[in-house]
Image 1: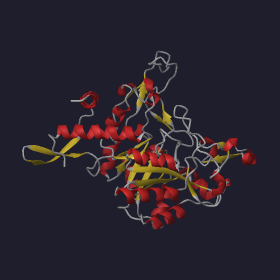
Image 2: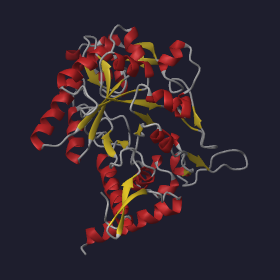
Image 3: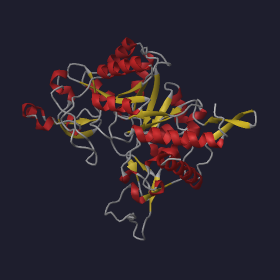
Image 4: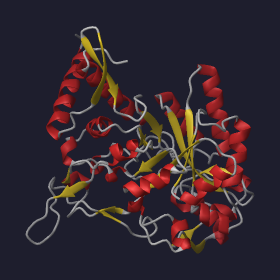
Length: 416
């Protein structure tokens, strides 16, 4: 056995021990017998391997939502590439997480646009910056994308342009045709109420582009997602037949208790706010909430803390302790709590579960994962999630390979 194979074998044994220690050992369900072995079925909704969704492309390595980031994710082997869609002044759908361009581009360094800086409200939150709806596509194409995380590579800042949704469609179609693969896309209508108020609604443009791509069916390589139920419902009633995913947000975790907290703009869908609906996002994960989602969507995309939350150690004064002594209080100082039943509950009503977002940085990994992001993936894969949103495609795929090997060993090498 060579050194690499030995390391892989050792990692596989370690990962299995990790799952058992945490109580995540019900990774397979027996469904039949064949010869001398039981045949096992994965506990995902459809019994298939979970998909790896490249969140904003290979955003752990390159500035997010650029053509280069999507190309990198595809090269790494992503099953799906994900993008947020906002609108330019001239009604073109571009891939950006925020209408405020200051967060992910070098717009602040463009003196020719200095006069367009302003302060407005986006989904009830006051923001100051430069907003995509004040720029034509031609103007936006002069901007460079930048990394949104200081821990990630900065040397590519300003080098890559903002990409349109149509350019991603063209990229994926070309790669699929060339390789015979089936890479899917996962667009999100971002801040749809905000865009509707501007007279730049996203939904009809998105429907038109999906139809033109030949992807308007449940079997097409596409999922359409939104945090606002009204956006998904509108598209469903206006001729969109793709798989749809209801995103479920929260503002953060109270590290003293492990409870999720809900603060504007991550307290509830903004269309609920505008309608006077007092429910929080947490209402969506109740049995009634899941049943309601099933009437218009095919799955949920919950923040991963709805499935496994984390909790710190609290001293006698009620303060969360800096367990690793780095002078910071973050998830590296926490322990994971017992998983909720959300995956099982969603599957019971026929909903896919695609939690977000998995990342490699140490500050984002609970102590139980022992500094290895693979262990976090294993914990979630073992609960039967149908896919994961990740900034690090290669890590998610490697972890999935380990998970499937674990299952194959447990089933005596007889997975269907």
